[in-house]
Amino acid sequence: MSETEGLPISIKEVQSCGIPVVGTSVGGIPEIVSNDNGLLLPENPSTHEVGNAIAEFVRNPAKALEKRSNTFNSWKENSDEQVLNQRFVEELTAMAKEGPSTEILICRKREQPGPGEGRA
View 1 (cartoon, helix red, strand yellow):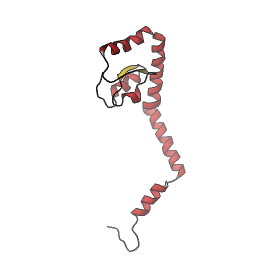
View 2 (cartoon, rainbow, N blue to C red):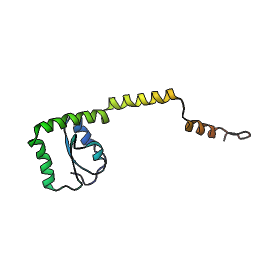
View 3 (cartoon, rainbow, N blue to C red):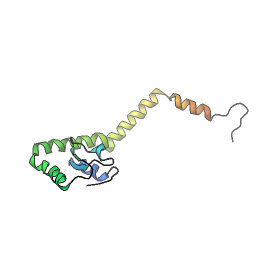
């Protein structure tokens, strides 16, 4: 159990296999672990809280199976390289169809030398 954390790749790796995670609510962990796809504990949980969280999967196999499915689906939607690449291509394509934004045009205009100004 982490007391501080960024966004652990190890959690994403096990989620890609549909394995629910028991994690602490620190750093980026709450962005990828929830009570829908695992169990999210408060910062610095007691050993009793950790043990109860793990035992919850054993006591309720139907809920554990549901969390396995939710875990994989959440990973697929938010972390799968192919899904993210496709989403990125779709967003770039949509932007290209819209044409350059006003902000880009303003920046380009500012970059052009004015009358009597040479390029350095």
